[in-house]
Amino acid sequence: MDVPKRAGIRWVVILSGFIFLAGCAPEQPVITPSVAPSALAVTLALTAPVTAANTLEATPSPVVAKDCARGDYFDEIESGGQPRQYLLHVPATYKPNEPAALVLVFHGAGIGAERFVSYTRFSTVADREGFLIVYPQGLGEEPVWNPSPGSRDVQFIRDLIDHLQRRCRVDPERIYASGHSNGGGMVNRLACELADQIAAIGPVSGAYQASGDCSPFRPVPVFAIHGTADTIVSYNGIPEWASAWAARNGCAPEPVDVTHNVLISERQWGNCKAGADVVLYTIQDIGHDWPSDLIDVGQTIWDFFEKHPLDSGSP
Image (cartoon, rainbow, N blue to C red; front, top):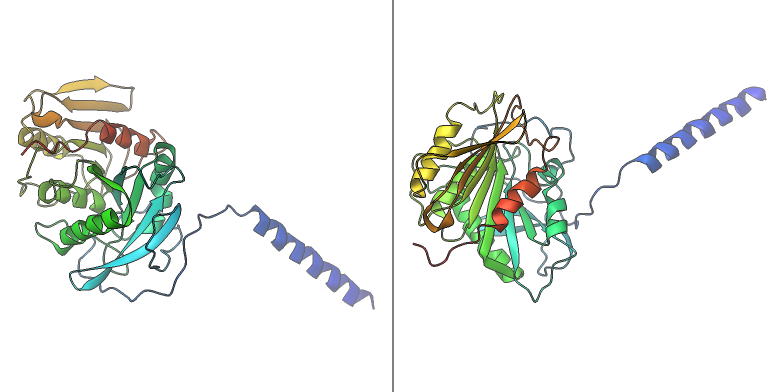
C-alpha cells in the first residue's frame, strides 16, 4: 500500500511545480480576439530576414472594431481587392476630441506585426507620449514588404491611413513612419511616394532597394540608424543613401559630425528646404538589429518626429 501513496505524493509535487511555473510566467499584452483570418499567399522573396524576434509569439487573428478606445486591436481592411491586416495600439492618454499623432511601424521580413511590437517596445513610447501607433502586416505566411515603386503595399498604406483617419482623431500633419530592415526599405518608399501624407521617416537597419528611384512631392525629414557590423544590409553605401536624401531636401552639402560616445556618432545635414533635416546615427560594432540595449530607439526616433510635422505649405 506504500507504493500508491508514494506515487500520489510524486504527482502532487509535480502538479505543484507546474502551478508555480505558470504563476511566474510574464504577462502578455491583451489583443482583442476574433475568428481566424484567411491565408495570404507569399508573393515576394525575403529581402532582409531578421532573427532577433524569431522566438516571439505568432500574430493573433484579426477582429473588426470600429471604435478607437484604449487597447490593442488586430484588425483588417480591404485594399487592392484583398484583406490587409494591421495592429493598432491606442494609448490610455488618447483623447478622442484632440487630434493625435500617428506613427506607422513596419516589421522586417518574416516577422509579423505582433512579434514586432515586443521587439521594438515602440508602444511603450506611445503610452508615454500619447500618440497612436499602428503596425501594418506584410503579405505571406512569413510576412514581407514590397518596397518597389508603385507596389500594392504603397496603396495599402494609403488606404490604411485613410481608414485610421476615419476611425480615430488623427492629426494629418503628424503622420510618421518607422521600420526595420525590409520594413525600413518600405518606409523609404513611402517617403518617396506618400510625401503628401508622411511627415517624416525613421528607418532602422533599412534595406533600401531601388532607393534611387525617388521623387518625393516635398522634402521629407529623415532620421536613420544603422550599425557598422550589419552583415544582412551592409553599412557600405548607407552614408551615400543618407547624402542622397540630403540632396533631395536641398540641405547644405557638408554635414556636421557629432560624437556621442565611443560607439555612437551622428551625421547631420542642416539648412534644408522646409526644415527637412537628414540625420544618420551610426553605431559601431552593431549588426542587423534594433539596438534597444544601447539607446531607446523608439524615443529617439519620436523626438525627431516631434520636431518635424508636415509642412503643408511646402511643395
